[in-house]
Image 1 (cartoon, rainbow, N blue to C red):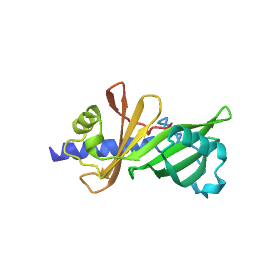
Image 2 (spheres, one colour):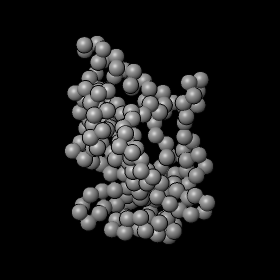
Image 3 (tube, helix red, strand yellow):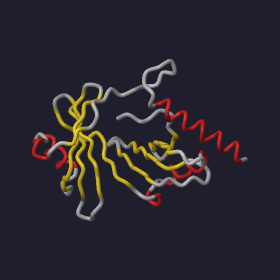
Image 4 (cartoon, rainbow, N blue to C red):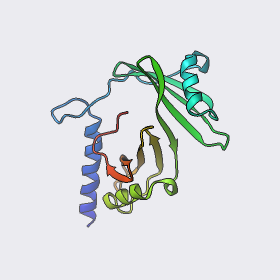
Length: 176
């Protein structure tokens, strides 16, 4: 049984790695990104901050990063809500207007939707991630990113998409 479980982990890890591997014979997609650059809050355009504040008026923005992805400008604005929880807003410009493309926060397993927990337990029985990111896409889709070590002690990432109460293990890394 351990050999079967090890093989399942290896296959899952290979699928995630191949999804990040770029355009190749397997059809993997690679995002052309500049890399994140820490940005002084004063250098973030006012319209980016205004769009973020419109979406989360209670967020105190404490950090910013900039990058280009596939030719589009992105700002990641990190901050804190009054309850002390940390949030990140991924901002991009569509048709000249800055929007929130995704909101992210770290959560515990107790906040993960039951359907997602069931999918994770079915695919990876007994696995306990050490970090979970909830990525709300703003359109009813939530992608849960699970990070941890597999049984061989190797770092791994598993993504599960939740849409309309249905959970699906993602083979390709989610790109918003």
